Length: 124
Image (spheres, rainbow, N blue to C red):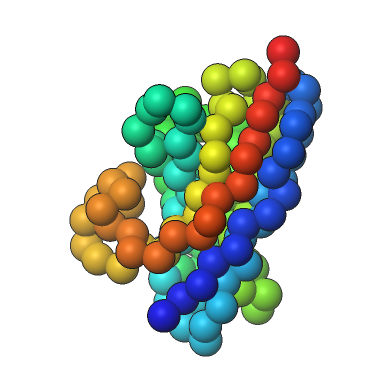
């Protein structure tokens, strides 16, 4: 079992920056690929970014590539999402998740453990 707690969401102006954190319980955090997803009102949950267990490899949705950065600190059991130059289109609830099967890292079906989410609102 892994428990995830996101934090760092809030209101940010377009063009600003925000860093989300996701703290995980459990001693096996460093063995898992971790992902960030988001869900806007009336829309399906969508992939944002993922990071390999060691942190050596990262993957991004085209919509955030070059603006968002995923990272992790395995000593702190924490994964981060640095959001730079957000736009109102980035407004959503952001979730972190643990990848537990061999499906694509961009598929929500690949992840079994989810946090409760943190709201990010970008004002224009």
